[in-house]
Structures are given as structure tokens and as C-alpha cells.
Length: 550
Image: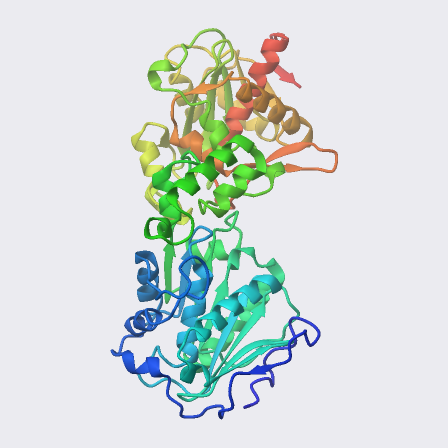
């Protein structure tokens, strides 16, 4: 064997393992033996050759084991995009159970045998990195399974090692070595891979994963290599995999199967967006997905969050403690405009004043009827279209503006006084009973209220820290779950609550936070303030005063 081990990879799995290295056949590494399948492949395009090669493989396991591999439309699309000219990195985000590992293993085998190019490089190196030891073994078994489905004469060109290292060596067409490694292992990676596959990248340990990714990518340039990053969605924007999707560098092909936020977990159309293989017999059937979604809805909490993240491919934290309310719980408060309660009784105005990059938001709550309304405002610069692009939400802000839920005001910042005056005009002559806002901005709020002619309206200062925040969150949740919050369908509120989580201190206190670094939770924050104050007023009416410190 050629010494690929030098400056390459340390033992990742520990020990020698129960199985001694198994050699399928003798045969010189880097030999000239010919794989019979290669004679059936033609064309110059890597993508076309890859699709042809994959179609010659036999499915190694499952209910379709032994049958020819048939690519689904989404798989074919990804192969064409990821293997196109001038593409260095192909990124695929898709729900769990859509044969990601099977596709990756097939492409790894194609590169190993030199099927993807007319004149492949000799001594090809393939790195298949999985999230942990168990997943690495699963990926390795897929690779070996494809080999075992080849004609006996072709199998004789492979050497399979199942010991301390998981490797497959190919002794034909210039030779090649494929290694399956664990991203959480203690590895030292060197060499120059011609193909690197990073499986379930969103689930890798942050520090170890980022270090391994950097090592892999730095080695690709030595041989014009290519990387494929394939994973189910990360739970938040800060994850490295999310950044590949949201801000891809030049030479990156991105294919993301993620439905819009704010839809019921059992909505079939959106389930099929995240699971395109279901309609083509890959993975779970559509009926199973719907039934699992309904089961997750019934259980709620972390079960529902996990289903949304893994099966719907949404950026939702799987930690129950970090969820303010689930999207489904929030949607339980939505009613049709015709069924919205009247504006009756005292009105509470909750406000969250933003800066140059943040949204300023207002929530109007009538505790006697439960009616809730909300408005958001951005500075005019940059435009809503540009903000949507930089926040990774496409034209969402423009849609909110068209719906009358979002406006622009000012230039680089929203002017507090004129904004508050504009917000109050939304009430059509109704004077709010009180205004609730963040204590941190009290000086600006006092000036804004005077400028807006609201100097006589009581202002209640609240904090977003552990003390005030925990009480307000608890009161808001209780009112929501008791059916005391009713709102017309609102993109502004729906997406704000989908981005809102809570942080929990050792004493069990909660405070509001963002699930995404670019998330806009301002409307949710204003709503929590307004509804919590409404709950306090219903329990014990607040005494009238110009300013109260609670």
C-alpha cells in the first residue's frame, strides 16, 4: 500500500477493533485494473458521469435492497449543481430520512473508482466526515454495501479495512483511498483530498467541527478538490452550517429544502418541501410524516421542536427550555379577522424601541376582550428588500409592508417621538390606558411621549432581564394558553415568535432572547410586555400615576 497515512489521519476510533483488516483481494495499489461499470459511463460532464454511475449501483439495504439505485429529482438537481464547473463547495439542506448518507456514499465511491472524470487523477483521496463514531460507521457500511453489490470481478479491486481505521482502497484506474472519519474524534488531518464529504454538518461539535472543516477545505486547493456539505438544518443562524446557507462564498452551490416559517407542523405541502423524497418513495411516506407531526403536536414542547427541526428542516431549537412558545402554540391564538374581538375596555400599548439595525415595534392589547394588534417599523435605510436579503429572509419584510404590518420611518434610525405619535394614530382616537416599555430606554421614551402629546399617559418601566423578564414571560404564557390572546393572522407576529426563545438561569428565571442572530423578535417583546401588563391589571388594577416602577 502506498503510504497515505503520513501526515494524514490519526487513529479516530481507538483500539484495533474486533475485526482485523480485511483484504478483498490482492491487487496492486494504483494498478491499472478496470472496473467493468466504467465502460458504461460516457460524457465529459462530472455531473452527468456521476448520475450515470449512481444509476448502476444497487441499493445495499432497506426494503428496496438489491434494486438499482434510482435518483429522485432533488438528488439529481443537487448532483448537477454541486458538480458544475467552477463550483468548489456544494451545500444541501434537507429533512432527516431523505437518503443523504446514501447519496454521499455513492458519490464517494464514484470518486474513489475515478468514475467522475474522463481522465481522473491518480491516487485519489476521499474524506467522508460524519458527526460521530456511530454515524461514521453507518456511512462506512453504505460505502461497503455498494461495493458488495458490484460484480465479483470488480469487488476484487477493493481492499476494505474495518480495524482502527475505516478505509477502502481501490487498486484500479490509478488507485484511490477513501477514509471515513468522525468529526468529534481526535484527528490530525493532512493530505490533499480530491473529494471531501461533510455529513450532518449542523450536528458537529462547534470547535472540533470548525477546525476539521477548515483543515479539509485548506487541503482541497492542492488538487482542485471539491467539498459536499450535506445536513439537516441547524437550530439557529449562528451555526456554521447556517452560515454556508445564508452567506455562501463564491464558488458555492446551495440547495435548501426548508418550508416557510409559521405553518402548522402537520401541513402536508410544507412537509413535502422539507422531504421531497417522500413523494418518490425515498424515506418516510407522506402519511407517516403527517401522523408523526400530529403526534408531536399532541406532545408539544421539545418533541414538537425536534420534529420541526429534524423532519421539517426548520431552524428551531430542540431544547424545550429555550422555547418561548412554539409556532403551533402561537397559531392557536390566531383567529380570522371577522372573529377578532372588539376594541373594548382599556388599551395597553407595549413598545420596543429599536436602533439603527433593529426594528421598533408596538403591540396593542385589550385585556377585557383579548384583542391583540401589532406594528413594526424599520429605518428607511437600507431598504426593506436589502434588509430582507442581509437577514436571510428574502422578501418577507416587503410582504409585511404590503400587508400593512410593517412600515419605514426616518433615515438611519426611527425617530422615537414621531414614531410614537404615528403608532398612537393607529388607535383611531383611542388613548392608551398605559404604555409599557424597556427601562433601559426610559429617557428616550419620556421625551418621545412629550413629543407625541402623551405626557399624561402613565408609562410603566419594565426590564428585559431575569427579574422583570421572568415574570412577564410567565404571565404572557399563562394568558396565551388560557385563550386570553386573540390576534388576526400576522406575518410580523408569527415570525417574531418563531425567532424568540428564552434563556434560563440556574434559579429557573427566564429572559427573552433570539434563536437566530439575525432574528427580529421586537414584535414578540412588545407583545409580552403588553399582555403581561394586561394580566396584572386584570388581577389587580394598577393605580393611576404618571410613571410607575414595578
